[in-house]
Image 1 (cartoon, chains in turn red, purple):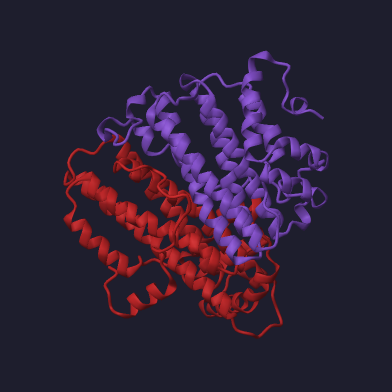
Image 2 (cartoon, one colour; image 1 turned 90 degrees about the vertical axis):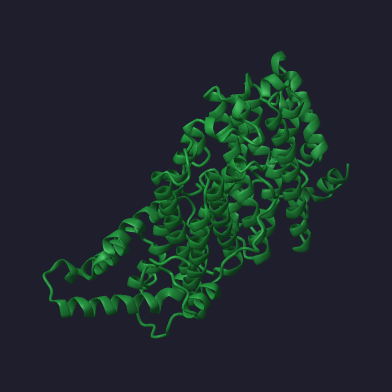
Length: 270
Length: 255
Protein backbone atom coordinates (compact mmCIF):
# COMPACT_ATOMS: atom_id res chain seq x y z
CA UNK A 1 0.00 0.00 0.00
CA UNK A 2 3.03 2.30 -0.06
CA UNK A 3 2.05 3.17 -3.61
CA UNK A 4 -0.67 5.41 -2.25
CA UNK A 5 1.95 7.93 -1.33
CA UNK A 6 3.12 8.15 -4.95
CA UNK A 7 1.58 10.02 -7.82
CA UNK A 8 -0.75 7.58 -9.50
CA UNK A 9 -3.12 7.68 -12.39
CA UNK A 10 -6.88 7.76 -12.11
CA UNK A 11 -7.00 4.25 -13.56
CA UNK A 12 -4.53 2.92 -11.02
CA UNK A 13 -6.42 4.66 -8.26
CA UNK A 14 -9.67 3.04 -9.23
CA UNK A 15 -8.02 -0.35 -9.46
CA UNK A 16 -6.52 0.04 -6.03
CA UNK A 17 -9.82 1.16 -4.62
CA UNK A 18 -11.49 -1.96 -6.01
CA UNK A 19 -8.71 -4.10 -4.62
CA UNK A 20 -9.02 -2.51 -1.21
CA UNK A 21 -12.77 -2.98 -1.27
CA UNK A 22 -12.36 -6.64 -2.21
CA UNK A 23 -9.87 -7.17 0.60
CA UNK A 24 -12.33 -5.70 3.08
CA UNK A 25 -15.05 -8.04 1.95
CA UNK A 26 -12.86 -11.12 1.93
CA UNK A 27 -11.55 -10.73 5.41
CA UNK A 28 -14.65 -9.39 7.11
CA UNK A 29 -15.66 -12.81 8.45
CA UNK A 30 -12.24 -13.28 10.05
CA UNK A 31 -12.64 -9.96 11.74
CA UNK A 32 -15.78 -11.19 13.38
CA UNK A 33 -13.90 -14.11 14.80
CA UNK A 34 -10.91 -12.26 16.06
CA UNK A 35 -11.93 -8.83 17.19
CA UNK A 36 -12.43 -8.43 20.88
CA UNK A 37 -14.88 -6.08 22.44
CA UNK A 38 -13.79 -2.53 21.99
CA UNK A 39 -13.62 -1.78 25.67
CA UNK A 40 -11.81 1.35 26.58
CA UNK A 41 -10.13 1.64 23.20
CA UNK A 42 -13.47 1.93 21.47
CA UNK A 43 -13.79 5.65 21.64
CA UNK A 44 -10.29 6.26 20.35
CA UNK A 45 -10.89 3.88 17.49
CA UNK A 46 -14.20 5.45 16.80
CA UNK A 47 -12.78 8.95 16.71
CA UNK A 48 -10.07 7.83 14.35
CA UNK A 49 -12.56 5.96 12.21
CA UNK A 50 -14.69 9.08 12.04
CA UNK A 51 -11.64 11.05 10.99
CA UNK A 52 -10.86 8.45 8.37
CA UNK A 53 -14.45 8.55 7.20
CA UNK A 54 -14.29 12.28 6.69
CA UNK A 55 -11.26 11.74 4.49
CA UNK A 56 -13.26 9.49 2.25
CA UNK A 57 -15.14 12.14 0.36
CA UNK A 58 -13.25 11.65 -2.87
CA UNK A 59 -11.99 8.55 -4.53
CA UNK A 60 -8.44 9.43 -3.73
CA UNK A 61 -9.34 10.19 -0.18
CA UNK A 62 -11.32 7.01 0.06
CA UNK A 63 -8.18 5.04 -0.60
CA UNK A 64 -6.12 7.29 1.65
CA UNK A 65 -8.70 6.86 4.39
CA UNK A 66 -8.35 3.13 4.18
CA UNK A 67 -4.61 3.30 4.52
CA UNK A 68 -4.79 5.75 7.39
CA UNK A 69 -7.29 3.57 9.13
CA UNK A 70 -5.31 0.45 8.54
CA UNK A 71 -2.20 2.02 9.90
CA UNK A 72 -3.69 3.79 12.85
CA UNK A 73 -6.52 1.79 14.27
CA UNK A 74 -5.02 -1.62 14.72
CA UNK A 75 -8.51 -3.02 14.65
CA UNK A 76 -11.89 -2.64 13.06
CA UNK A 77 -13.43 -3.76 9.84
CA UNK A 78 -11.15 -2.00 7.43
CA UNK A 79 -7.90 -2.97 9.02
CA UNK A 80 -8.96 -6.57 9.02
CA UNK A 81 -9.35 -6.26 5.29
CA UNK A 82 -5.88 -4.95 4.83
CA UNK A 83 -4.45 -7.64 7.01
CA UNK A 84 -6.30 -10.33 5.17
CA UNK A 85 -5.21 -12.41 2.27
CA UNK A 86 -5.70 -15.73 0.66
CA UNK A 87 -9.40 -16.04 1.15
CA UNK A 88 -11.60 -15.81 -1.90
CA UNK A 89 -14.91 -16.20 -0.14
CA UNK A 90 -17.55 -13.52 -0.37
CA UNK A 91 -18.72 -11.74 2.76
CA UNK A 92 -20.56 -14.05 5.08
CA UNK A 93 -24.28 -13.71 5.45
CA UNK A 94 -23.75 -12.52 9.00
CA UNK A 95 -21.41 -9.79 7.82
CA UNK A 96 -23.90 -8.69 5.19
CA UNK A 97 -26.66 -8.76 7.76
CA UNK A 98 -24.59 -6.70 10.17
CA UNK A 99 -23.82 -4.07 7.59
CA UNK A 100 -27.47 -3.90 6.56
CA UNK A 101 -28.43 -3.27 10.16
CA UNK A 102 -25.73 -0.65 10.57
CA UNK A 103 -27.04 1.04 7.43
CA UNK A 104 -30.50 1.06 8.96
CA UNK A 105 -29.05 2.64 12.08
CA UNK A 106 -27.26 5.27 10.01
CA UNK A 107 -30.49 6.07 8.17
CA UNK A 108 -32.17 6.81 11.48
CA UNK A 109 -29.37 9.17 12.43
CA UNK A 110 -29.59 10.95 9.10
CA UNK A 111 -33.30 11.29 9.72
CA UNK A 112 -32.74 12.67 13.20
CA UNK A 113 -30.26 15.27 11.99
CA UNK A 114 -32.60 16.24 9.18
CA UNK A 115 -35.54 16.51 11.55
CA UNK A 116 -33.73 18.67 14.07
CA UNK A 117 -32.47 20.84 11.23
CA UNK A 118 -36.00 21.33 9.99
CA UNK A 119 -37.25 22.02 13.50
CA UNK A 120 -34.51 24.55 14.14
CA UNK A 121 -35.35 26.20 10.85
CA UNK A 122 -39.02 26.35 11.78
CA UNK A 123 -38.11 27.80 15.15
CA UNK A 124 -35.90 30.43 13.56
CA UNK A 125 -38.75 31.46 11.28
CA UNK A 126 -40.99 32.07 14.26
CA UNK A 127 -43.44 29.38 13.21
CA UNK A 128 -43.29 27.73 16.64
CA UNK A 129 -43.64 30.86 18.71
CA UNK A 130 -41.11 31.87 21.36
CA UNK A 131 -38.43 29.21 21.85
CA UNK A 132 -37.37 28.69 25.48
CA UNK A 133 -33.60 28.73 26.03
CA UNK A 134 -33.55 25.13 27.25
CA UNK A 135 -35.31 23.91 24.12
CA UNK A 136 -32.92 25.75 21.87
CA UNK A 137 -29.94 24.30 23.71
CA UNK A 138 -31.48 20.86 23.61
CA UNK A 139 -32.11 20.88 19.87
CA UNK A 140 -28.66 22.17 19.03
CA UNK A 141 -26.86 19.73 21.31
CA UNK A 142 -28.89 16.72 20.30
CA UNK A 143 -28.59 17.50 16.62
CA UNK A 144 -24.80 17.55 17.01
CA UNK A 145 -24.79 14.23 18.86
CA UNK A 146 -26.92 12.59 16.19
CA UNK A 147 -24.45 13.78 13.60
CA UNK A 148 -21.68 12.07 15.56
CA UNK A 149 -23.74 8.91 15.79
CA UNK A 150 -24.32 8.94 12.06
CA UNK A 151 -20.61 9.41 11.48
CA UNK A 152 -19.88 6.43 13.71
CA UNK A 153 -22.25 4.13 11.87
CA UNK A 154 -21.00 5.35 8.52
CA UNK A 155 -17.44 4.72 9.59
CA UNK A 156 -18.40 1.09 10.10
CA UNK A 157 -20.00 0.97 6.68
CA UNK A 158 -17.00 2.44 4.92
CA UNK A 159 -14.64 0.21 6.85
CA UNK A 160 -16.78 -2.68 5.68
CA UNK A 161 -16.28 -1.58 2.10
CA UNK A 162 -19.69 -0.03 1.64
CA UNK A 163 -20.78 3.48 0.80
CA UNK A 164 -21.93 5.64 3.70
CA UNK A 165 -25.66 6.11 4.28
CA UNK A 166 -26.65 9.65 3.40
CA UNK A 167 -30.40 9.26 3.05
CA UNK A 168 -32.85 9.13 5.95
CA UNK A 169 -35.06 6.16 6.65
CA UNK A 170 -37.58 6.85 3.87
CA UNK A 171 -40.75 5.69 5.57
CA UNK A 172 -39.97 7.59 8.74
CA UNK A 173 -38.91 10.61 6.72
CA UNK A 174 -42.26 10.67 4.97
CA UNK A 175 -43.97 10.54 8.33
CA UNK A 176 -41.76 13.28 9.74
CA UNK A 177 -42.44 15.57 6.80
CA UNK A 178 -46.15 15.08 7.21
CA UNK A 179 -46.04 15.78 10.92
CA UNK A 180 -43.74 18.78 10.57
CA UNK A 181 -46.25 20.39 8.27
CA UNK A 182 -48.76 20.27 11.11
CA UNK A 183 -46.64 21.38 14.06
CA UNK A 184 -47.57 24.64 15.67
CA UNK A 185 -45.84 24.56 19.03
CA UNK A 186 -42.64 23.46 20.70
CA UNK A 187 -44.59 20.63 22.30
CA UNK A 188 -45.62 19.37 18.86
CA UNK A 189 -42.00 19.19 17.82
CA UNK A 190 -41.03 17.58 21.11
CA UNK A 191 -43.56 14.79 20.54
CA UNK A 192 -42.15 14.18 17.09
CA UNK A 193 -38.59 14.18 18.39
CA UNK A 194 -39.55 11.78 21.16
CA UNK A 195 -40.91 9.30 18.64
CA UNK A 196 -37.66 9.47 16.69
CA UNK A 197 -35.48 9.08 19.75
CA UNK A 198 -37.49 6.05 20.85
CA UNK A 199 -37.20 4.46 17.44
CA UNK A 200 -33.46 5.06 17.59
CA UNK A 201 -32.72 3.61 21.00
CA UNK A 202 -35.10 0.72 20.55
CA UNK A 203 -33.41 -0.13 17.27
CA UNK A 204 -29.92 -0.04 18.74
CA UNK A 205 -31.00 -1.97 21.80
CA UNK A 206 -32.44 -4.66 19.55
CA UNK A 207 -29.05 -4.82 17.84
CA UNK A 208 -27.91 -6.90 20.80
CA UNK A 209 -30.08 -9.68 19.43
CA UNK A 210 -29.11 -9.27 15.80
CA UNK A 211 -25.56 -8.00 15.31
CA UNK A 212 -22.79 -10.58 15.28
CA UNK A 213 -19.93 -8.12 15.08
CA UNK A 214 -18.85 -6.96 18.51
CA UNK A 215 -17.30 -3.79 17.20
CA UNK A 216 -20.53 -2.71 15.57
CA UNK A 217 -22.50 -3.81 18.60
CA UNK A 218 -20.27 -1.79 20.90
CA UNK A 219 -20.98 1.29 18.85
CA UNK A 220 -24.74 0.66 18.82
CA UNK A 221 -24.90 0.02 22.53
CA UNK A 222 -22.82 3.08 23.35
CA UNK A 223 -25.30 5.20 21.40
CA UNK A 224 -28.59 3.70 22.58
CA UNK A 225 -28.26 5.08 26.13
CA UNK A 226 -27.60 8.58 24.84
CA UNK A 227 -30.73 8.48 22.67
CA UNK A 228 -32.60 7.28 25.74
CA UNK A 229 -31.26 10.28 27.64
CA UNK A 230 -32.54 12.57 24.91
CA UNK A 231 -35.90 10.87 25.28
CA UNK A 232 -35.86 11.33 29.06
CA UNK A 233 -35.56 15.08 28.67
CA UNK A 234 -38.33 15.10 26.07
CA UNK A 235 -40.60 13.08 28.35
CA UNK A 236 -39.98 15.66 31.05
CA UNK A 237 -40.58 18.60 28.74
CA UNK A 238 -43.86 17.03 27.67
CA UNK A 239 -44.96 16.66 31.27
CA UNK A 240 -44.37 12.92 31.67
CA UNK A 241 -42.13 11.05 34.07
CA UNK A 242 -38.72 10.95 32.38
CA UNK A 243 -37.98 7.25 32.93
CA UNK A 244 -41.30 5.53 32.27
CA UNK A 245 -40.06 1.95 31.83
CA UNK A 246 -37.68 -0.22 33.81
CA UNK A 247 -36.41 -1.79 30.62
CA UNK A 248 -36.26 -0.68 27.03
CA UNK A 249 -38.88 -2.17 24.77
CA UNK A 250 -38.06 -2.88 21.16
CA UNK A 251 -41.41 -2.83 19.44
CA UNK A 252 -40.52 0.38 17.62
CA UNK A 253 -37.16 -0.94 16.45
CA UNK A 254 -36.36 -0.50 12.78
CA UNK A 255 -34.95 -3.36 10.76
CA UNK A 256 -33.09 -3.62 7.46
CA UNK A 257 -36.30 -4.98 6.00
CA UNK A 258 -38.03 -1.71 6.84
CA UNK A 259 -35.37 0.20 4.97
CA UNK A 260 -35.37 -2.17 1.99
CA UNK A 261 -39.13 -2.37 1.64
CA UNK A 262 -39.73 1.33 1.90
CA UNK A 263 -36.82 2.14 -0.39
CA UNK A 264 -38.03 -0.21 -3.10
CA UNK A 265 -41.63 0.89 -2.78
CA UNK A 266 -40.79 4.30 -4.09
CA UNK A 267 -41.46 6.27 -0.95
CA UNK A 268 -39.77 9.60 -1.33
CA UNK A 269 -36.77 10.08 0.84
CA UNK A 270 -36.06 13.54 -0.27
CA UNK B 1 -15.37 -10.43 61.37
CA UNK B 2 -18.13 -8.18 62.50
CA UNK B 3 -20.10 -6.18 60.03
CA UNK B 4 -19.01 -2.97 61.69
CA UNK B 5 -15.41 -3.91 61.09
CA UNK B 6 -16.11 -3.57 57.44
CA UNK B 7 -18.63 -0.79 57.38
CA UNK B 8 -16.73 1.15 60.00
CA UNK B 9 -18.14 2.83 63.07
CA UNK B 10 -15.34 4.94 64.36
CA UNK B 11 -16.75 8.21 63.14
CA UNK B 12 -19.77 9.15 65.16
CA UNK B 13 -21.01 11.50 62.49
CA UNK B 14 -21.46 8.71 60.00
CA UNK B 15 -22.25 5.78 62.21
CA UNK B 16 -25.97 6.28 61.91
CA UNK B 17 -25.86 6.34 58.18
CA UNK B 18 -23.68 3.27 58.07
CA UNK B 19 -25.97 1.39 60.35
CA UNK B 20 -28.83 2.25 58.06
CA UNK B 21 -26.84 1.15 55.06
CA UNK B 22 -26.00 -2.05 56.83
CA UNK B 23 -29.68 -2.60 57.36
CA UNK B 24 -30.42 -1.87 53.75
CA UNK B 25 -27.79 -4.32 52.63
CA UNK B 26 -29.08 -6.95 54.97
CA UNK B 27 -32.48 -6.45 53.44
CA UNK B 28 -30.98 -6.90 50.02
CA UNK B 29 -29.51 -10.23 50.93
CA UNK B 30 -27.34 -10.12 53.99
CA UNK B 31 -23.87 -8.69 54.15
CA UNK B 32 -23.13 -10.85 57.15
CA UNK B 33 -23.63 -13.97 55.09
CA UNK B 34 -21.44 -12.48 52.41
CA UNK B 35 -18.61 -12.10 54.87
CA UNK B 36 -19.21 -15.43 56.53
CA UNK B 37 -18.85 -17.07 53.17
CA UNK B 38 -15.38 -15.72 52.83
CA UNK B 39 -16.23 -14.02 49.59
CA UNK B 40 -14.71 -10.74 50.63
CA UNK B 41 -11.32 -12.26 51.34
CA UNK B 42 -11.12 -13.65 47.85
CA UNK B 43 -12.31 -10.52 46.14
CA UNK B 44 -10.00 -9.09 43.57
CA UNK B 45 -10.83 -6.49 40.97
CA UNK B 46 -9.82 -8.70 38.10
CA UNK B 47 -10.11 -12.08 39.74
CA UNK B 48 -12.37 -13.45 37.04
CA UNK B 49 -11.82 -10.95 34.27
CA UNK B 50 -9.91 -13.23 31.95
CA UNK B 51 -12.20 -16.18 32.22
CA UNK B 52 -15.48 -14.54 33.01
CA UNK B 53 -18.47 -16.54 31.93
CA UNK B 54 -21.91 -15.32 31.09
CA UNK B 55 -23.01 -16.36 34.55
CA UNK B 56 -20.27 -14.39 36.24
CA UNK B 57 -21.06 -11.29 34.25
CA UNK B 58 -24.75 -11.54 35.03
CA UNK B 59 -23.95 -12.05 38.70
CA UNK B 60 -21.75 -8.98 38.68
CA UNK B 61 -24.48 -6.96 37.00
CA UNK B 62 -26.96 -8.20 39.61
CA UNK B 63 -24.55 -7.34 42.42
CA UNK B 64 -24.45 -3.76 41.20
CA UNK B 65 -28.23 -3.65 41.18
CA UNK B 66 -28.24 -4.93 44.76
CA UNK B 67 -25.83 -2.21 45.76
CA UNK B 68 -27.76 0.54 44.01
CA UNK B 69 -31.00 -0.58 45.67
CA UNK B 70 -29.28 -0.53 49.03
CA UNK B 71 -27.83 2.90 48.38
CA UNK B 72 -31.18 4.39 47.38
CA UNK B 73 -32.76 2.75 50.40
CA UNK B 74 -30.15 4.40 52.54
CA UNK B 75 -30.66 7.77 50.92
CA UNK B 76 -34.39 7.50 51.51
CA UNK B 77 -33.77 7.36 55.24
CA UNK B 78 -31.72 10.54 55.37
CA UNK B 79 -33.27 13.95 56.09
CA UNK B 80 -35.03 15.21 52.94
CA UNK B 81 -33.31 18.56 53.19
CA UNK B 82 -29.97 16.77 53.01
CA UNK B 83 -30.78 14.54 50.07
CA UNK B 84 -32.93 16.85 48.00
CA UNK B 85 -35.98 14.70 48.64
CA UNK B 86 -37.76 17.76 49.97
CA UNK B 87 -38.40 18.38 46.30
CA UNK B 88 -41.33 16.07 45.57
CA UNK B 89 -40.07 14.98 42.17
CA UNK B 90 -36.73 13.99 43.66
CA UNK B 91 -38.47 11.89 46.30
CA UNK B 92 -40.57 10.28 43.56
CA UNK B 93 -37.43 9.62 41.55
CA UNK B 94 -35.77 7.80 44.43
CA UNK B 95 -38.82 5.61 44.92
CA UNK B 96 -39.39 4.75 41.27
CA UNK B 97 -35.72 4.31 40.50
CA UNK B 98 -35.30 1.88 43.37
CA UNK B 99 -38.24 -0.11 42.01
CA UNK B 100 -36.73 -0.13 38.54
CA UNK B 101 -33.45 -1.42 39.88
CA UNK B 102 -35.42 -4.12 41.64
CA UNK B 103 -36.85 -5.10 38.27
CA UNK B 104 -33.34 -5.21 36.84
CA UNK B 105 -32.09 -7.37 39.67
CA UNK B 106 -34.99 -9.77 39.31
CA UNK B 107 -34.57 -10.01 35.55
CA UNK B 108 -30.85 -10.63 35.87
CA UNK B 109 -31.41 -13.30 38.48
CA UNK B 110 -34.04 -14.95 36.28
CA UNK B 111 -31.53 -14.98 33.45
CA UNK B 112 -29.00 -16.54 35.79
CA UNK B 113 -31.43 -19.30 36.70
CA UNK B 114 -32.15 -19.91 33.03
CA UNK B 115 -28.45 -20.42 32.46
CA UNK B 116 -28.17 -22.74 35.42
CA UNK B 117 -26.33 -20.18 37.48
CA UNK B 118 -26.89 -19.04 41.00
CA UNK B 119 -28.78 -15.79 41.57
CA UNK B 120 -26.76 -13.01 43.12
CA UNK B 121 -28.24 -11.58 46.29
CA UNK B 122 -25.17 -9.68 47.43
CA UNK B 123 -23.96 -6.18 46.63
CA UNK B 124 -20.83 -5.45 44.66
CA UNK B 125 -18.49 -5.30 47.59
CA UNK B 126 -15.64 -3.57 45.81
CA UNK B 127 -17.94 -0.79 44.67
CA UNK B 128 -19.39 -0.58 48.14
CA UNK B 129 -15.96 -0.14 49.65
CA UNK B 130 -14.49 2.09 46.99
CA UNK B 131 -17.42 4.36 46.28
CA UNK B 132 -20.51 4.06 48.41
CA UNK B 133 -19.04 3.92 51.87
CA UNK B 134 -16.67 6.86 51.40
CA UNK B 135 -19.38 8.92 49.73
CA UNK B 136 -21.99 8.25 52.37
CA UNK B 137 -19.57 9.45 54.97
CA UNK B 138 -19.30 12.81 53.29
CA UNK B 139 -22.88 13.62 52.39
CA UNK B 140 -23.61 17.20 53.27
CA UNK B 141 -26.28 18.14 50.81
CA UNK B 142 -28.24 17.17 47.70
CA UNK B 143 -25.25 17.65 45.43
CA UNK B 144 -23.36 14.91 47.26
CA UNK B 145 -26.29 12.54 46.90
CA UNK B 146 -26.68 13.33 43.22
CA UNK B 147 -22.98 12.77 42.61
CA UNK B 148 -23.01 9.42 44.38
CA UNK B 149 -26.08 8.31 42.48
CA UNK B 150 -24.58 9.44 39.19
CA UNK B 151 -21.46 7.41 39.90
CA UNK B 152 -23.46 4.31 40.74
CA UNK B 153 -25.85 4.62 37.83
CA UNK B 154 -22.98 5.33 35.46
CA UNK B 155 -21.17 2.23 36.64
CA UNK B 156 -24.34 0.20 36.17
CA UNK B 157 -24.93 1.53 32.67
CA UNK B 158 -21.33 1.08 31.58
CA UNK B 159 -21.18 -2.43 32.99
CA UNK B 160 -24.37 -3.48 31.20
CA UNK B 161 -23.14 -2.08 27.90
CA UNK B 162 -19.77 -3.73 28.21
CA UNK B 163 -21.13 -7.10 29.27
CA UNK B 164 -23.78 -7.02 26.54
CA UNK B 165 -20.97 -7.10 24.00
CA UNK B 166 -19.13 -9.88 25.82
CA UNK B 167 -21.70 -12.47 26.85
CA UNK B 168 -22.22 -15.34 24.45
CA UNK B 169 -25.87 -15.90 25.32
CA UNK B 170 -28.06 -13.73 23.11
CA UNK B 171 -30.89 -13.45 25.60
CA UNK B 172 -28.49 -12.24 28.24
CA UNK B 173 -27.07 -9.71 25.81
CA UNK B 174 -30.56 -8.46 24.99
CA UNK B 175 -31.41 -8.17 28.67
CA UNK B 176 -28.28 -6.22 29.52
CA UNK B 177 -28.82 -4.01 26.48
CA UNK B 178 -32.38 -3.28 27.59
CA UNK B 179 -31.23 -2.22 31.06
CA UNK B 180 -28.31 0.04 30.14
CA UNK B 181 -30.37 2.84 28.55
CA UNK B 182 -32.59 3.01 31.60
CA UNK B 183 -29.60 3.40 33.90
CA UNK B 184 -28.40 6.11 31.54
CA UNK B 185 -31.77 7.82 31.84
CA UNK B 186 -31.38 7.78 35.60
CA UNK B 187 -28.03 9.49 35.11
CA UNK B 188 -29.64 12.03 32.82
CA UNK B 189 -32.31 12.90 35.37
CA UNK B 190 -29.73 13.22 38.11
CA UNK B 191 -27.48 15.43 36.02
CA UNK B 192 -30.34 17.67 34.94
CA UNK B 193 -31.67 17.90 38.46
CA UNK B 194 -28.25 18.67 39.82
CA UNK B 195 -27.82 21.39 37.23
CA UNK B 196 -31.16 22.94 38.14
CA UNK B 197 -30.35 22.87 41.83
CA UNK B 198 -26.96 24.40 41.16
CA UNK B 199 -28.63 27.10 39.08
CA UNK B 200 -31.06 27.86 41.87
CA UNK B 201 -33.97 26.74 39.72
CA UNK B 202 -35.47 24.18 42.06
CA UNK B 203 -38.94 25.44 41.15
CA UNK B 204 -38.36 23.96 37.70
CA UNK B 205 -37.94 20.45 39.13
CA UNK B 206 -41.57 19.52 38.72
CA UNK B 207 -43.91 17.78 36.33
CA UNK B 208 -45.04 19.45 34.23
CA UNK B 209 -42.17 21.92 34.17
CA UNK B 210 -42.51 25.54 33.23
CA UNK B 211 -40.58 25.19 30.01
CA UNK B 212 -40.31 28.89 29.44
CA UNK B 213 -38.36 29.42 32.64
CA UNK B 214 -36.07 26.42 32.36
CA UNK B 215 -32.47 27.64 32.23
CA UNK B 216 -30.56 26.85 29.07
CA UNK B 217 -28.36 24.34 30.88
CA UNK B 218 -31.37 22.10 31.38
CA UNK B 219 -31.33 21.40 27.68
CA UNK B 220 -27.89 19.83 27.60
CA UNK B 221 -26.72 18.96 31.12
CA UNK B 222 -28.31 15.52 30.96
CA UNK B 223 -26.12 14.18 28.17
CA UNK B 224 -22.65 15.72 28.03
CA UNK B 225 -21.28 12.91 25.88
CA UNK B 226 -22.47 11.66 22.51
CA UNK B 227 -21.38 8.11 23.36
CA UNK B 228 -21.74 6.27 26.63
CA UNK B 229 -18.32 5.71 28.12
CA UNK B 230 -17.50 2.28 29.46
CA UNK B 231 -14.49 3.17 31.53
CA UNK B 232 -16.65 2.93 34.62
CA UNK B 233 -17.66 -0.64 33.85
CA UNK B 234 -16.88 -3.02 36.66
CA UNK B 235 -14.62 -6.05 36.13
CA UNK B 236 -16.53 -9.01 34.81
CA UNK B 237 -16.05 -11.27 37.80
CA UNK B 238 -16.15 -8.65 40.52
CA UNK B 239 -19.60 -9.58 41.73
CA UNK B 240 -19.55 -13.23 40.80
CA UNK B 241 -20.75 -15.76 43.33
CA UNK B 242 -17.75 -17.76 44.45
CA UNK B 243 -18.39 -21.47 43.91
CA UNK B 244 -17.28 -22.50 47.36
CA UNK B 245 -19.64 -20.05 49.04
CA UNK B 246 -22.71 -20.92 47.04
CA UNK B 247 -24.51 -22.65 49.82
CA UNK B 248 -23.95 -19.75 52.15
CA UNK B 249 -25.03 -17.17 49.61
CA UNK B 250 -28.02 -19.19 48.75
CA UNK B 251 -29.07 -19.15 52.36
CA UNK B 252 -28.56 -15.43 52.45
CA UNK B 253 -30.83 -14.97 49.51
CA UNK B 254 -33.72 -16.40 51.41
CA UNK B 255 -33.01 -14.71 54.67
